[in-house]
Image (tube, rainbow, N blue to C red; front, side, top):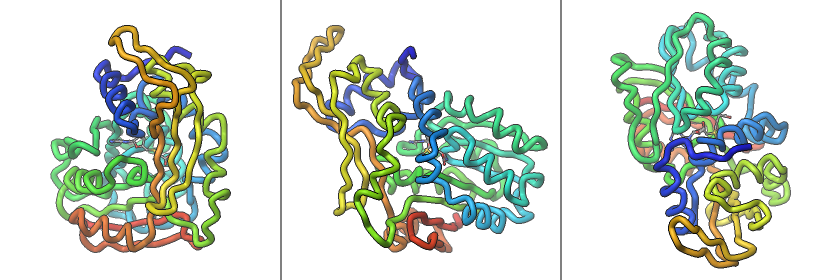
Amino acid sequence: MKRYFELTTHENQVWNAFLNGAVPLKYAYSGSASITHARLAASAGYQAANWRAETETRIVSELLGSKANKLVEFGPGTGDHSAFLLNHSTIKNGIEAYIGVDFSRMLFAHALPKLRKSMPRTTVSFVHADLESEPAQTMLLLNHPVVFVSFGSLLGNVESPESTAVNIRDSVPRGSTGLLAVSGCPLELDTKQILKPYESEEFRLAALEPVLTLGLKASDVSFDLKWNAEDLSVNAFVELNQNFTNIDKDFTVPAGFRAQCFTSRRFTPARLENLLNEAGFSEVKITASIDQSSLFAEVKT
Ligand SMILES: C[S@@+](CC[C@H](N)C(=O)[O-])C[C@H]1O[C@@H](n2cnc3c(N)ncnc32)[C@H](O)[C@@H]1O
């Protein structure tokens, strides 16, 4: 597979982040990483870790009810999760317009046919945004409150959940209603069980793709996963087995250099509630799955 960045500017951004010790996960969804992510998302482990179909379907249906004429989705990914929920909820025929907001244009192109198929009567559009940096320019398309959703723990995968939550709030008109799903913290905290969904070749390749696109070879690096019990996050690290010289830019990264290439933060209900209140959402209501491994926040702007 040919490796490439989605935008030429991403190469420098990924180099800088790598040399600073942590590559933001958004680059693992864009460019050629949209393909490795799609492979990962199609694997059974990914769905087991990210989908809580029954609870999500119920809450989405209740939330959207009959009032959903415009739906904004933040981070639709491959579109499979959204298409599944739309196909299993009562609202899909009532949505007049759907707007997907994502950092990755390429992943959205992959999602588009599935979204169109699951909402044949709906106008589907896309707004590109880096929600870690700024709100999406969705307001240009919206003049009334909407329903907005995010599935698969976008807030747990970004560098700053705080600024991303504020930017999500500022991307939709006041009075909008939303459902933000994140990964929770299972009641029985067993490190082995938490790391298990990530112990696959699809996951390793997906997490490494931005770093390999810099020119490193999979054989030049080691990869390991850690559970951080203090800040409740799963992190993956890449470590150089030998010196790597960037000939174009004339610098060498020494053997032993280590950088984070994946993060998945877990939330307790209290931590999520606090984050969303601080971000300026109102009427925050958290529902947890029975084992607390998934949390669903209903919010208003
Ligand atoms: C964890 S995936 C979830 C995908 C999908 N909703 C699911 O449940 O499988 C995160 C999605 O958010 C997008 N994303 C990640 N960081 C982003 C950012 N900073 N701004 C906008 N979208 C971002 C990714 O491109 C991807 O589509």
